[in-house]
Image (cartoon, rainbow, N blue to C red; front, side, top):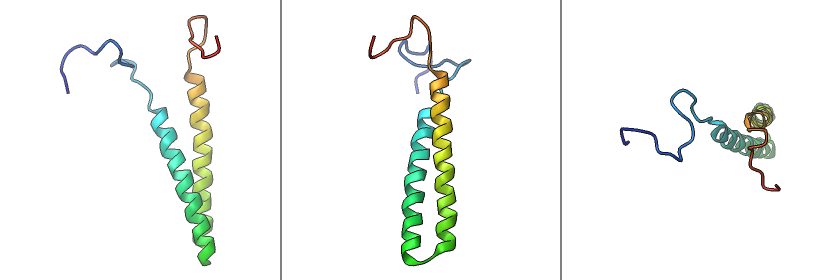
Length: 87
C-alpha cells in the first residue's frame, strides 16, 4: 500500500470515507438467494422447521436489501452539478 497523498481519482477521504453500501447490497443479495434456495431444498426433503428458519433469514435479507437501496438513494448527490444519464 503506497504511503503519501491520495490519488486524484480516489473516492472518499480520511474524514469522509467512501460508503460500503454497494458491498452490503451484494452480500444481502447473496444471503437472500442462498437462504431462499436452501429453504426450498429443505421443504423438498421434508424439514419444515429448518425451512421456516431459513425462510425468515431470507426475508431479513430482503428487508436489508430494501434498506440499503433506500440509503444509496439518499446518499446520491442532488442539485445542478449532478451528472445524469438522461441529461
